[in-house]
Picture 1 (cartoon, rainbow, N blue to C red):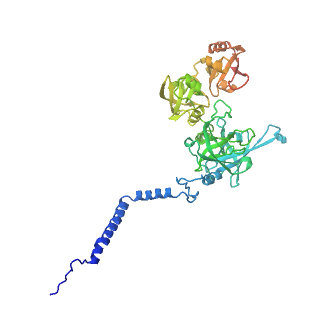
Picture 2 (cartoon, helix red, strand yellow):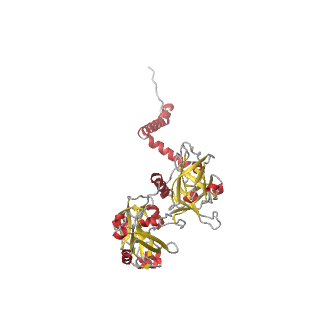
Picture 3 (cartoon, rainbow, N blue to C red):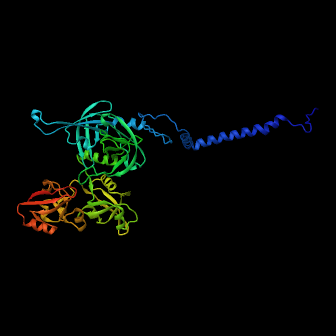
Length: 493
């Protein structure tokens, strides 16, 4: 019988190699495959997301997104800033406005002179609503709109709001390119923006800059209830840009270009735009009601400066100081008092008067807002129901004096600080009733009465005594703090 005998010291080389190298390799490989399969079964989406995030961080250069498909840029860091997408989105929505007016004359024989002004506007809806500046179309009778693709339309005026220098036009067209509203509250100083308009009739001009400041007041609007809280930029804006779009890098409308500071009449460094959140509120009201429905707290205010902060013992130079609370106003009924410092509205800081005005202007009569304020070393919260801006008085019943209800205005005595501020003493008219005798005579709020029937008066009691002795006609004289000269009114009992 034969035997197979392994010699001492001799090893089976093939078996040894498989056992030492190949078997562990296949075991490890099989384990890896099994691990991947199990991971993909239980965590498929997370794996994909992790890969995508890794790819995003690796690649800085990427293909231009498609505008038609509504895609935006990824959040990948890139340098320099590329404005091509924002320009492509916004430029088709910016129009050229030609506003024509004729001075008074003998129309039937061709008299009167024709005046033409041009500016820009922004289509804000596909059915042809266009927002622009009030000063672009003011006093005009005919409006011609030229689109970026050279189509022309006649436009009708829907309404205006001189207090914010805004106006709304409408053309009869459908499926128009339009600029979507962005959130101007989220805009940060230093952010890139572009201005789109028609300077010097150069259509569809795009310039770029950064946000230089927010809540800027430059005192260019006239009236008692103007709202100036401009976005300041260094994007180049020139005559003809008025009413055009200020957009962010996503192509969203965040302002309407309105003004520049200049000595030459041309761009010299800074331009100013009405914030989009305020624009949206104003235009929505004009579309719905024909005019702006602006809420009113019923207070006179001033920005807190260093001297005032020290006097009030504030820990910071911030807030808006209440110098007067109108009787029966929302602020009065809520409990605000003269001397309080408003620090916030609905949690938003109100460091300056323009900031406060911008926030309040986005609300309507009847809305309730939460006021954060400082009084006697402590911070407080309360809610104020806003009144009606258009009449500066809720209704006739709020006039406490029966004699004055006949005329539709209220009066208050001036205090020592107000006499010093205005340079004259008398009685202040803080409230006017819409369509009342005083309203129709042209009297407006903040009128200071100094004479009645040519008699000098210094107090409410003196005014009422003389009013009681008056017959059918009443002659009133006085002044407005922001205007030169005396103003006179005639009222009838």
